Amino acid sequence: MIRFSKLLLALGALVFTSMDVAALEPDKEAAAKTPHVLAQRPSEIWGVILGYLDRESENALNEATCGKELGYISDVIRGKRMSRGIIFNMETIETANTAQFCTVLENYQGVTSLDFKNMDPAILLTALGMLPQGFVFPKLQELNVIEFHFQTGDSFFPIFHALSARIQMMQLRDLNLEYNRLGVTRVMAALDPILPQMTELTSLRLAQNNLEEAGVLALTPLLSKMTKLTRLNLAGNELGTARAMAALAQLLSQMTQLTDLDLGHNDLGHAGAMAALVPALAQMTKLTHLGLADSNLRDAEAIALALVLPQMTKLTDLNLLINDDLGDAGKAALAQFNFVRL
Image (cartoon, rainbow, N blue to C red; front, side, top):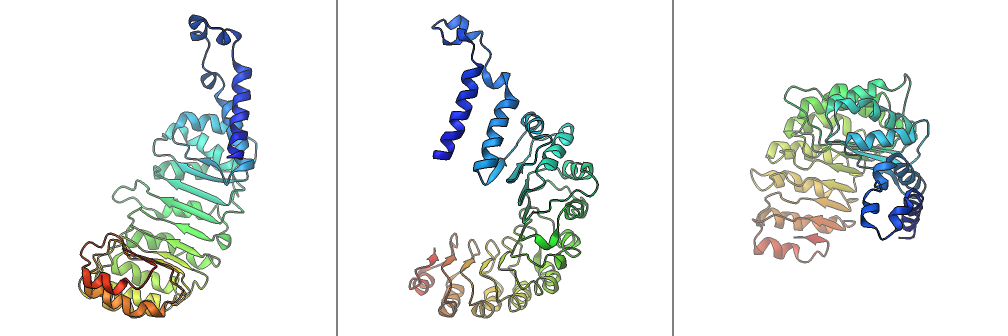
């Protein structure tokens, strides 16, 4: 609250110095003629905001959502080097703003986190190509590329290849590709060349990418070698078959270092899926968070899971929300564990 008050004071000072004396008079007609401060001095307003955020906040820029604001921002930071993280939610940005977008990227070279969300892939690809030769984000540790508007037949590989050329992969700690619905072919085209370079990666999020059984099998040789990976999210990847769960169980048996695993939004209540998974979970004694929400679990699956929970001694959160087919017997089996969310 104290930090935010500093921003309000700074903006208040800028507004006061911009006001016409007539606006202070009790004359509505004179006041109406006084231009609104934000309309008159947008670049200065953005300068105050970005300067404050770069000093005081974890993220210097959060959700620049349209071309007009992006233009102000690129003018303000041109030639500067912003040091904090940046989040781009640019669902409405148009191709005409690509150069301004490139300016923003160039001036946030020192960030540790980049978040691209809801973007036209062509705009990002063009902007990355406009960056100076040899440009990299040398301190980047977290990369989020989520909810992209890929059309049928679009290739994710050019986007990810262009991004990876600007990143020192050995420094990356967190890679998030959730909600892109890429399919196994596009996921592997992107990850196969670069995952071996990510020797320090601790978090990989691939939720909602239509991986299916083939995706798990393709990822196993890569992920099994990533000994520092502690967080894995494979939620919503159509893994609800016995064969898919058997493939996943084989992978998890080689990743017992995981502390956070999310397999929610997969149909695990049919075709023996949980029967294949439960023995693998019993070996994961370092898990603190396990997500199985909206997985169509029934009593039989819940009872089988409850039998191995005593072996998972570090588990502090088991998410079983939205499992509407779970009956009294299953709930009773899980009731003894105070970390279960139903």
